[in-house]
Length: 149
Image (cartoon, rainbow, N blue to C red; front, side, top):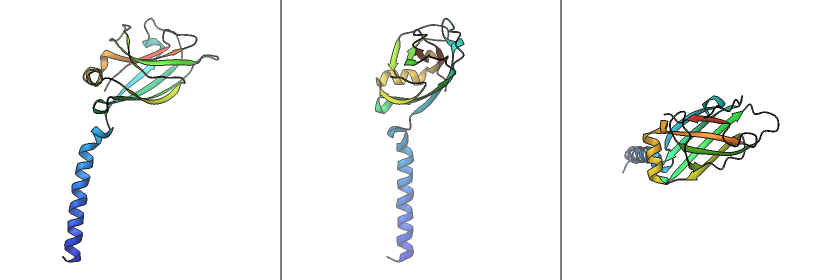
């Protein structure tokens, strides 16, 4: 085999490998991205908090995993974030917790296990779910945002 043929063969193998890796990435953890804009006005009833934030959520159905990156600020002095969750309910309605995000700070990133059927439902109906944070001063929920694509 000539050097030119060997190089062409190597390029062919690398191209095939790149295609396989690209197709496999979602199954390996790429997941479906969703987001939520968090504010006190979105809570039910509105919390009156000046705090705001964002939640970037990645659904990995095949892995049974939900990953979140929450960034928030604007809390009053002495206010401490004590919890964060994904709940099931439409805008303006309070609903049960379906995913505990184990939040313990205003800026928090974590991946947690979740039922694959739940992840599928969140993926298909993100507006039917919301992310909210709870603080020591507003334990019922200080900021909230519905998920969206």
